[in-house]
Length: 316
Image 1 (cartoon, rainbow, N blue to C red):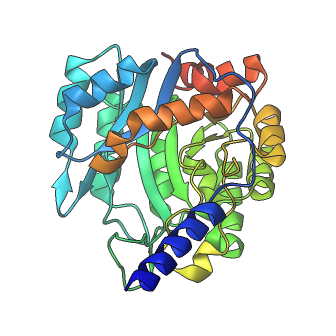
Image 2 (cartoon, one colour):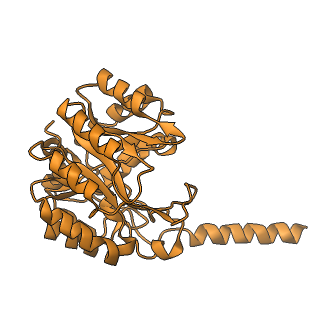
Image 3 (spheres, rainbow, N blue to C red):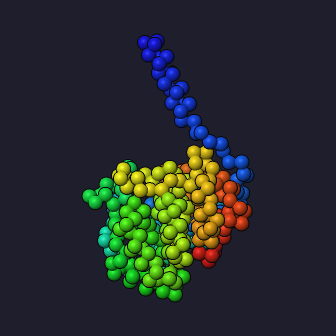
């Protein structure tokens, strides 16, 4: 028994040693300026008052917020209530629907266009065009939620937003690049005056992100979740197509990502994508981590990504 305990202790010590990152932490001071959270969402289970106070306490000057709507939860009432109570802090977006497939629902399009016309929605919250099943999330028969951007609904929505200056968040992940990039390339080109926001840079590599941003100046992107080591996809093959995080294990900004952030500094956005309760609870840690990342950029680039681009995008 004693030998077994010693062996277990040695194994634990080896695991701890092997898990030590072979890198050094950043030497640049963390960014200390204001932040605008360009993408956050919630269902009805959030303690909204506490969440807003946490954001404000961590130097966040505003949030682009939208509701999550699916069969088990609906955050519309909470988000609308928070927007009324914090009108100078929350930019309200059209709700995110989880159950659309193949094309946008007519009821969704009508709600968005009505909300925009009534000046309730300042942007269109995340539409799930290509969203692979996540570990611990809902499993679908196809392994993904998929909306074809070339079907009529998307063009109807974008045409309805003409001259409205309303950004549209289109979530598509790069794991099926051959299928999806040609379609989004065509869509972005057909509507050059419409600003599209690409959440999480599609979880792509710096090379793939550069292809998209270089091809279309009307595409902006959030950096949310690109500090994470993976996109949490349940399918190993899809996961293999996902790009690496923007930082190493010690939060040092990778050279290719630093170059990309400098190159496209006018269209990249800090965002937390706080959504479920677990990520909202990590809000302070997420903000602090991104302050470390932003601190490794030239000061003018850090400011642009941290809040200035969002101020232009949402006219705040």
